[in-house]
Length: 569
Image (cartoon, rainbow, N blue to C red; front, side):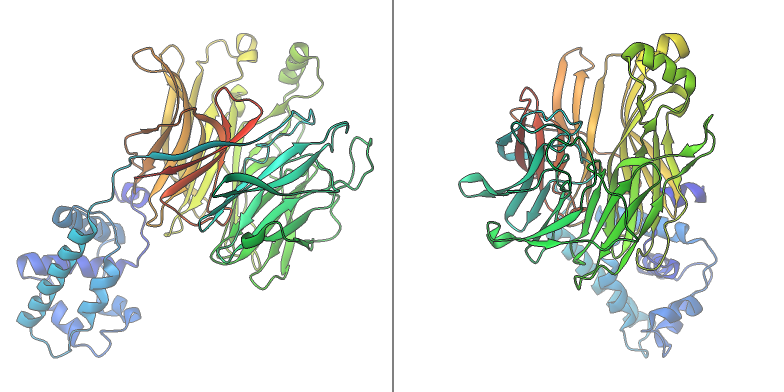
């Protein structure tokens, strides 16, 4: 039972704090102080150390596990106030401890009851969490694009984001295909801003050429960053070296000249136009990290601190695929990367040429190509401090390797208690190989969710599931959205058939509640649903918000990148 509580109840505060409130609630309700220590409260409050939090472990024996105290504390809050959480602990706790050491039991109880009345009044003023009632405030096209036929596209860097909100301003980077230029480096970056008159082009690369879209990040102080990767090769040359750089703009005047920032790397990495790069920001901390793949061996990374110095750099080696018929490193691509207080979290999918000879040979018969890539193992790693500690050993979060399935990362968020939330899409098998290799395996499509603590998966849930042989709705493109009070939502695209057999094509929002339970899915009333998209994620430095911003492609509008703004309630 305690193991289940540990997984379902995050414990952001020390155990003695939970026990303090557990005993206090008994004192308020029954006039006695629990666990057989009837006189514990007066002795605590008369102690000369009663205002010193670190002394509490000595003053309060803790005979039961912390999960038990927190469970009953939260339960008592829920029964009394209809709320579940720790927000008011920081108000009542220091107030009770500040009572005079000479107080009597009756006066202490009076003070506690007054504080309880204050808590009730605060709860009534604040009210219950608002119900999810999405309102579409804007839904509009930004730009159109032409297929560059180079293997990339405007959403190719979907592990990062090309959409940033800084205050009331929203910025989007675009990908423009250059006419009469041969692939691979036949595109340039563009930068748009949404003003009073809608979206307007602010800047574009006037000289460089590239293959991939340019992810962005922003700081609350108005600095806007764009990750570029211009080729160093002349026109007409198919592939070759490239130079990673970060362009810094001022949000108040994006048309003004930008500052070019060149990351400082470990050694001289052999960068190319196939960057598979990830760009993340700690907005409140004013710090950045850029990661860029080097072939099939590792990713190079560079960290820029709040003083504007590239104070740390290194290499992240790929997981070891020793179990394959021919052992090889497992390149990890399309990752969601998060930077927070110098901790870095990285979660991506395997992306190597088919490692199993019999499957590879059969795929060649079907496609005529020597290569076909696998995307079916989800890996996670992290470091508590990118400037001081190495990345921890890789953890495999999910796999469909046994049935030649498919996995794609969706999003990653770290809660205030340090729990790592991960969401992804998953398919059981490759239908092309089914008849020959997996005739008895049933197909299914799922959006899955997990919580990770210190490299251990402590919670798994399925957000949506469609199983073969049953009318069902298939979920895809899951993204997290976080509000200022740390409510966590998933937005996804849903297609298929409803239980009644009707065609479905819409976006839905689903709240993930503490403990991993899901709220009722709510449709977002777009005129045309978004089938694939970025959000103004906190991983890109945008602040948590009650407004959801999207940048992506809408149903029935190929070749057009669109924007939407949604008020959650």
